[in-house]
Image 1 (cartoon, helix red, strand yellow):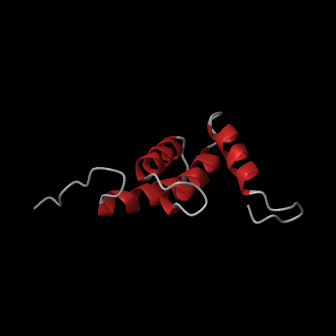
Image 2 (image 1 turned 135 degrees about the vertical axis):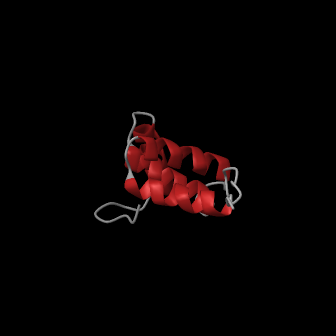
Length: 85
């Protein structure tokens, strides 16, 4: 997405991430989840962000597991579970 070697094209990057995610591309799911969470380049959607991170984590993406853990910790896009006593 930084445009190294090619002209920067956010729409094309999102299209390619989406195509890859639809074919179980776990790193594309991770990137889409981050984009949905940030809401800077595409419309913010924390539920969609959580969905992308959950799918990516289920495929073994450790980075997505960390991002999903952060979301669970504060209850963003997922239901927060109260701390057990």
